[in-house]
Amino acid sequence: MTTSLIMSKKEVAAALGICLSTLEKNVKKGLFPPPIKHSLLRVGWLTADIENFLKGNKSQEQPDKNA
Image (cartoon, rainbow, N blue to C red; front, side, top):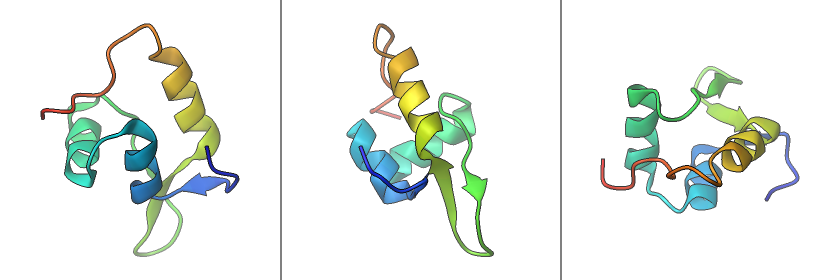
């Protein structure tokens, strides 16, 4: 994973193996945690939240890649 505290959309999408639009759709559907706003124009996810999400989904299906 990354060493930064906040992961960008690109970093999260790459970690999940999905495209940016799929990430956004999964957030809207409630399949993935919403991002936090860390400036006027930037959002991201806490690295710990992404790691916890991935750990919790090891035995479950990954976010919808075909959304």
